[in-house]
Image (tube, rainbow, N blue to C red; front, top):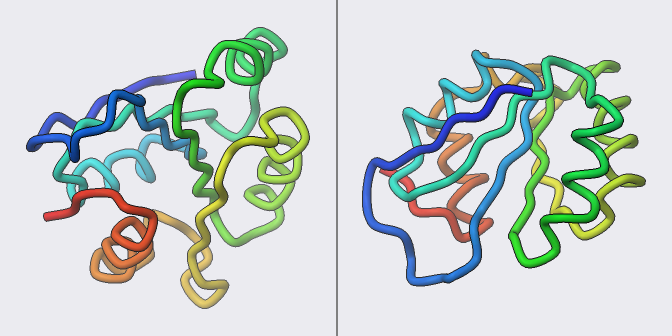
Length: 121
């Protein structure tokens, strides 16, 4: 699983670390271009290993975990897996019309993130 952090601006005053789980690097890159606060973005590359699932499920209770996957079959499969493995995660959704995070308009992604209380550019 790949990890990237957005450090484009000041956080919004929480001691809790924010984590967004996405499918791929193009999704991560889209979010990094929009976010204006420190956020850890984990790329699953479509799947999660047993070790990653255990780490996320057990070790991140104090963190704010979000899931943002594509609106397609692979994204929905991963979302269902994460909903079971990490029940405390908050799920964010793009429109089926856009299908992929990488092709979702930046303005719409900014709206999704803003509604979830992320600082955006």
